[in-house]
Image 1 (cartoon, helix red, strand yellow):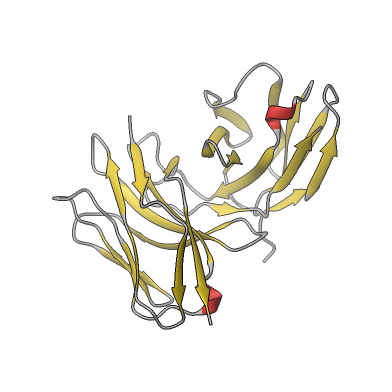
Image 2 (cartoon, chains in turn orange, green; image 1 turned 120 degrees about the vertical axis):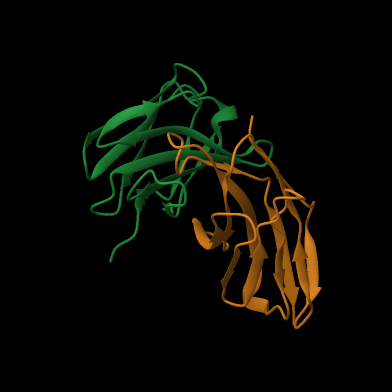
Length: 114
Length: 115
């Protein structure tokens, strides 16, 4: 079945550091890929998405590129802020009928210190 | 616009008691999802509805769990009887379509503790 694997956390960075959170996936077809973010005490929010190979999703300074050859969708940000502290989830959806049924990775806790 | 609304935000109950979690999806969204989040198992899809009809309940852990959607603006997830292993955060989400890249909008969750 479909699966998503994220790098183990937690990740702790200083403000303005470069961020990479790795995400790889296993799917039988051509999934859409997502990054969701969960701030403390809140539900998940869509951060960015990409629907086909080589697409780049971007939002709030975060970027991720859909790499079919490496089945990856790594999240990056050039300069993190304290307000980026949250849990980040990589996810995929696949199939005409499954549609927005999402398969999530384990989540990666990010803490940014001033 | 109001987002997905869930109640209660926190619930503490004793083993064996009935628990009912409530969700109001975003108006106009035809799909509603119930998820469970635990440290051990991460985020799991329990069930989802389309136009108030349950489509896939294969993620519901056992018969103690049931979900209903009596109308387009309200859904419940019931656990009867509850057990300590049901302790988790339960999220409700809604989306407009079941398209491949459609966004799901999550509520703030209900943190359930079963003693």
